[in-house]
Length: 530
Image (tube, rainbow, N blue to C red; front, side, top):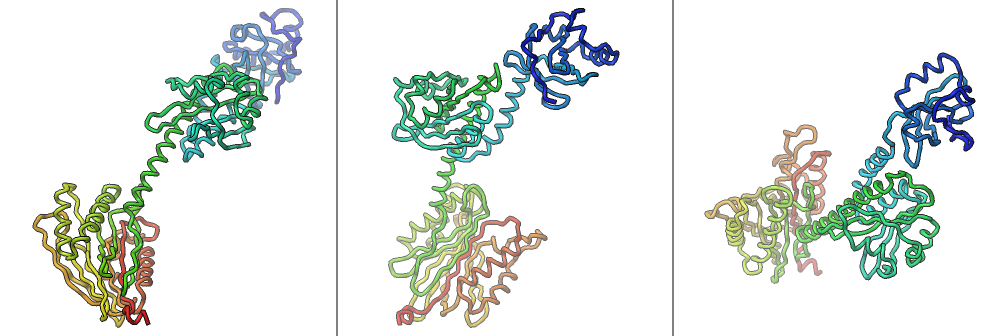
């Protein structure tokens, strides 16, 4: 049922009388029984034509004898509007097509409606991403309930404002305009300059609207009401901005409209400040990743390096596992693969420290055991309490192929896949790095024939847990059996097969940091030149 407001000629009598209005009421007992059930609440009686015919004392007190507007929202519910305020009502059908409207709350529904609007807006503001996405959502939400046309203005470089607009709830715009001097637009300028604890909704005069760039002024000028409210200032993020709201008709929230705008501006400003802080954190994170993430290995004569590097995940796309290949002036290279105790940002930071230390020391020292001893002393003096396992080595290619010198600090033994068949385990004594000042390390030298592949790996491989049986680890034996089947394969193919097997073993389950470095002996330089 869609109700109609009372005709202008219809008066709402202050008291039911024996006159025409009251005499027109049906006389059935059922009518009066239904009506009298709600006499303690405000009750309005509407005839079959939609005219108001009677009100009880509670209604006359609530509405002061004026004619409120009755609007049905369904067969049994609606609202009664008076002086811009809405009151929820229950509609009861009476005999003869008449209706009784019972106001179910003497408190206007505008307050709850404002709270409902803010509650609905909150998750959208919270889920918005980035400065651009958040400003766009602010414009959309404001255009849906607060105004017919909305501009979100944020300061940017070179004396400009960046703007996002929305009108008719679906039409969007975005661009940049010059800032208008404070002497021409004092209200707007004051909104940006002041940061009151409570956002204040200010009216923007027509003459000030006219000073704005045409792309904004032309769209605002057709609206009788133009207001602006500050989005506030976050000291840490430096975010400040304003929302300009233009309306053609009455405010949607009646007397509570200013509160709705102010509360929304506060929530929107918080969302924008959070987006700005998140962007700064993300920028810092990307910067750290650029510094900490290993780089692709360089070309080194006589050998080819292939890698698989996969952190376990987290805020930084780096972890406690690492590798590095550092070229030397003699044509060889120093290489290292290791695992820092722990996960996350702290482990990643120590990983960076270890890598930088090795890179610096390798410029003046090439002996692997000496490098490990110096690194051990530095980690202990740093007082972090964390330790690392690693394999450190050097490679130099001669006429009879590359020679690998390897030293270990408590790390899983390197494995060599021989082209002629078989897998050799290079056993290296050595203690954890960063635990004891008395740590001792040893090194050994091996030769790689053309096509041999030396594989260095972290325990993210051998300790990978089965996706259905978490107690089952991938293990050393399974890795060795896999490598036996890699006879004659290139280093790249060996890494690919290890990665495929481990990922299949893990399924969709989580894993620790993983790092694999394969060193393949290629054709001797003299033959490669031919």
